[in-house]
Length: 488
Ligand code: NAD
Image (cartoon, rainbow, N blue to C red):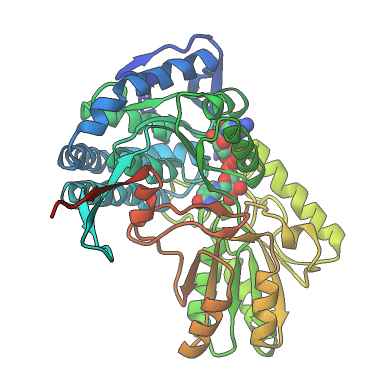
């Protein structure tokens, strides 16, 4: 199979039209598996952000006035169009992001499920509106309304470009908000394809706008724009903090989905074969570039020697290479910059005294592309950078524990608190440890399955707010109560 040369719009999308950015600066979009140029997109600026926000402001009242049923119709049409183009969309994501085609296909399915799910929630909104709240007094009646919060800025990263966009665009549109989406400058092609789909289903002009460009220019201008009511951001913890500071100037609402350094805990009573699969998936899926990567592995000391030896064997069979080839299990890292960053962490790991179990460099047969062998360190100092900081690459750090309490204590000893994976055959232990872990989501004896119905987000420096489920839509709604005196 060869790389797709799909058409994508090299322009920005404002007020229901494709248009040129005001500057003629362009960004090169690179295929990380081949280091070849995929195309160029607009590097927009402040004036373009202003035009996009103005279009969203102009469309705000009419969109907020549409019924939930009408909005559901558009969301279903988007899901249908994504379904109709799923193969091309998967190929485009693989070309731009480097993930194996089978993983890109999972992303596309997730996008479809997300738009359909929020279509259902939008459709239910009409019946839920103005519902009476029970009061302790018959002298008053109180009705609850959920209203869209207005124009929202949506900023997303490069690791799951279309999915992170769908998790924001679908609930925001369902709630009745108008949006300006800013994709990552590294992977804007999947979102440009989503914009083309939104254009195709004839969403009213100005309801959805997309501006490509750098974070420093377009992202910062969007967050600072006084026309926005809210910013929903997914990206690094450092930039999330900057976004929150900027939004504080005019007290915009913020939702933040940030980094992680999550733990997988393997107890001696676990199904070892399943645990090996789940541990590998938790760190090598998407080349480890997951906010939810379980990059810290804690293994019960009584089984550690055998488990780590089998883990090494299994990891050394992972097929790294061309993400379009059906046998490939791990593609390249998505950008040259991230490739360098991960390699620097590997150097820090070696310097920290941790033991390199496997990997650590470029696979010998892959001379081009940002490829790295799956890498594992054991005996990792608990105060080292590789144990404490998010690496965002295929690097697993392993330690052991003696007791359940110690496992929980080490797992919780982190600035982050996104997810955790628990591998145990003891249901009571699973319940105890799930309750004790300071994270937003625990998978028990399960890979990282995600449903639109369950929440996404974490504690500590990982998140502010939750995405997905009804909470994902509530994030784009204001609550209003109408309390009326009852005439007797
Ligand atoms: P990043 O923070 O560098 O960039 C994210 C987005 O913010 C990009 O679109 C970027 O252009 C924009 N941006 C950069 N500077 C900005 C500024 N000053 N103002 C406004 N926007 C700005 O993150 P990244 O490298 O693209 O993505 C990787 C990070 O994303 C990791 O930390 C990962 O954990 C996190 N992430 C979190 C989740 C989650 O759900 N918690 C999901 C995916 C990725």
